[in-house]
Image (tube, rainbow, N blue to C red):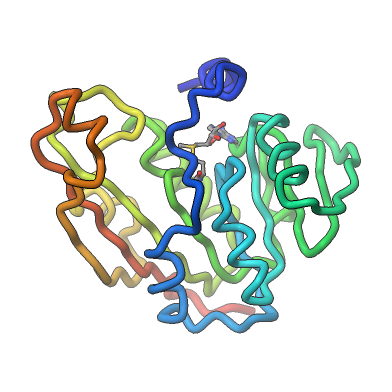
Length: 221
Ligand SMILES: C[S@@+](CC[C@H](N)C(=O)[O-])C[C@H]1O[C@@H](n2cnc3c(N)ncnc32)[C@H](O)[C@@H]1O
């Protein structure tokens, strides 16, 4: 799952992960995080997700990172936003209207970029990555974020041999391992195969979606 893989997916319009509506799990569970409206929210591997718009509508400033410039440009265009592009080191940044959308590689981010962040929304970011990259992704996320963050994480689990990723299967045990030392609460767990006819047609026989609230136990400065 290198940059070329994702750039090609966006170029060919193979973006089945993108949803035409706000994720109901986000609107249902976000209040549980009790994040003040004034807090900035980090959306890693953001694509052109409408969930960013919903978070903005709750009052949050929204920061995202995405490899594909065309995804960020589509987000700006489709929602008639007024964002200006600037080059910031190795990232291009589209800023304005309460958004800062960085175009570039998540793994090139440094903690100074995320210093104002207190909450994270991870939908289809962790599960977009193969196992070895997931460990690097979480380790890097934990290095980047200032102490005291809270995260809403959505995962999928299915027998990995029934279908290649992405999305990749992520078990409950893996989430607990990756976020060891954090407080992890399982908020929701549902069999959602009937909502994913394409996966069922590809041979998937079981698909469990989970929603977690993960909190960093360190005290914010
Ligand atoms: C499965 S999509 C999910 C997008 C979004 N979270 C959503 O819910 O629609 C994963 C996204 O991550 C982006 N991506 C993958 N690897 C990345 C990286 N290393 N840095 C930044 N973005 C990346 C891809 O281009 C793709 O848009």
